[in-house]
Length: 227
Image (cartoon, rainbow, N blue to C red; front, side, top):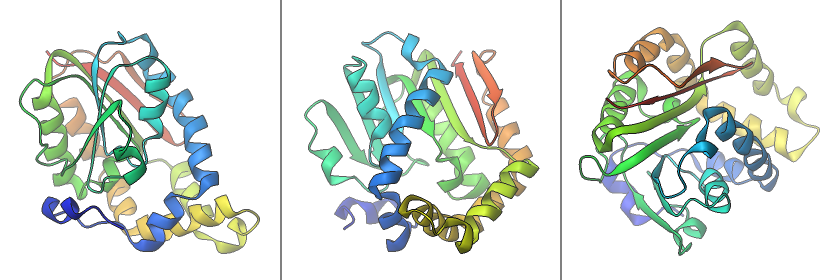
């Protein structure tokens, strides 16, 4: 069930099927394994452990739990819908909020991470607004760290694959991927079609030269400091 604060954000929430698929135990376990590797690629584990870190679009909190386990002591999360299990964690401050108008004062955080969520932010204008907000709430010298898809043939091929039920029937995890993909397909394709503008928006934030700016098979990784 959605948190009552969700309605105040004005963003469309994912469908019930998407929410159910996202919470599939196999996918949660997989995200936890993959997030550790991806946080490492971003260089997050080299950050001071007393850094104030916001996970923007934190979902069910796998990244935050990893950071907590790694000794980070000032952790916050924000999402359109607050995960109730995450809300009960005593080591975490979590809020319901719209990325386009984040509920934090200027220069609040040492770091903001956003993992696999740009394509959920309401199209190109939503991404632009959210990244400007992320820059606003970062302290001078604070880090913004991003992971999401980029447009390439292999990315589109991978999404074609998970859209085919006959390729995803063997396990519940793959079937959950299929459910998520069917829900995400319209805005994911809009995001991929707009990838050059998304990248231009990131480059236009006016941050220092990125510490991390690389790609793997289907994701890009980018991290830089605010001037």
